[in-house]
Amino acid sequence: MSRSSFTDWRLAFYFALSFCVVIASSTSGQSVRETPYRAHAALTQNLQSLAGANGPRAQLVTVATSPGGRAIQALRIGAGADAASRPALLVVANASGPHIVGSEIALVTAERLLSGYGKDSTITRLLDQRTIWFIPRLNPDAAEALFRGPRQERTANDAPWDDDRDQATNEDGPDDLNADGVITMLRIEDPTGEWMVDPTDPSLLRRADPAKGERGKYILVREGKDDDGDERLNEDGLGGTDINKNFTFSHPHLGAEAGMHPFSSPEARGLVEFVMAHPEIAAVYVIGPQDNTARPWTFRAGTGIAGAATGTSAGGPLQSIARPDEPTYADFSRRFLRTTGVTRTPTDVPNGGDVLSWFYYDFGRWSIGSRGWWVPEAPRDTSAAGRTAGGGGAPGGGAAGAGADLIADERNAFRWARARQPDAFVPWTKVTIPGETRNLEVGGWKPGALLNPPAGGELDSTLARQQRFIAELAGLLPKVAMAEPTVETIGAGVYRITADLVNQGGMPTTSSIGQRLGNPRRIRLELTVGSHTMLSGRKVELIGPLAAGGSLRRTWTVVAPAGTSITLKAESPTTGSVTRTITLR
Image (tube, rainbow, N blue to C red; front, side):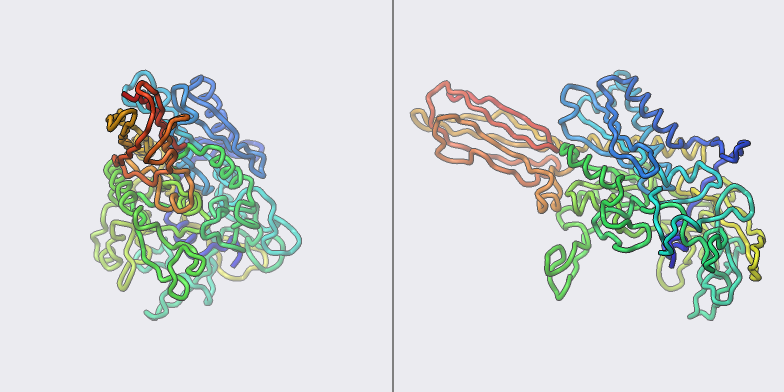
């Protein structure tokens, strides 16, 4: 199947999406945006303005430049001289091209936190103690497709790529067949097709189930024609690499838009280089298709290859999070659901080369992911037809199994959009293509989809909920502290020193995976005694994960003259540092 034909899950995901952007065409044929969402130029200008207006509390750096020449920038916010070195949260958004609501969440959260500093005591305390990095748009090339006419969904950057291996690039992309300014879907009446009209709503399509005697009637592809005359549709459009498929964990080698190899795109490589240069980043919040907040990641035992444990050379790569990390991810989810008030959970989107998974499995950081927004639960269809079809879909993203409504999410989205965005769905309309004798119709959800909420109350409430959760996450970052050590004289010039190390944060100092990878570095506990003698205890020790609010006690026996001062220091890039000067007496 060509890249433009979509895999099954991307088709399903596409149909679950829809946001309506009003476009006015200019005389040059370009589109003028009239939405609350920002194209790259506006986003860049806003980031620069924030950095310029907030002095030392905001710093802007360039992470990478996309093949399309667009700068990917990171904004650091935090107050105090140690803002660059203390524990930090990284917010990464819009690695998936159409997911522009993530960019708004990141940028608006940064704006509101900076504007609240010195006015709101909670925000002031947060930025005095924690640092937050924001990368609002990791895939700017693909995102721009939602701001230029004809608007379309794109996930790949602007790197030229010969998808169909015909020694030409970008020669057969989507076409606006009905001249409505957007690229939707083309359904082609064909007895070999897998798709059929939904019996309860002819606007919707679903896959035919041969086991039930159903037969497909349509082939479904992106709107377009055979521009290069090779009897295939849209098989080589603009773009090369989907940034959210270009990371190492479960990288779909040789898959559509996965890139030549992991980190082959400048965007992915730039992000990796950025986080390597900032070891203080303790946790990452990724706003994109993959989600582990509404539905937390759980430990799943696997047998691996030939019965060996997963995560070993014999057993193959890891297939789930480590068991010790499960309670923390459950806690992240509880906090997310409580803070945001979310009740309906999204359908799972498979992992594979994505940013969220890479940060946990291959980089060892706490990696929290959310769609940011998805279609709320629409009023239930109580009609007889609606009950037969599953009532429009069960809460929680739809069911799977015998008797389940396989397009529950789309049915819910259609009902919701009918009430809130009636123009979000383009009615199926006949079109013609020279030389094509089959019946052709264009229609479906407008690009951008209900992945991004419409302007107004729905977007405003989303931004407010996400801001609260991001601030809460930043407040949970691990933080090492130490009670005042005690000194006990146990003989002439012999002293026993006891110290308690505490994690004052709301998440463990390292994940179990991070400890296994040796990244991030564990807490380094060092007692400096100079030329004096240590009878027991370690001068230097690397401390394993400390649970949220957890503590440990260490003791040392030292021989030194009375009045001697020694130092005890505990530090890690992701937990901060604390130093105590101890006088022996």
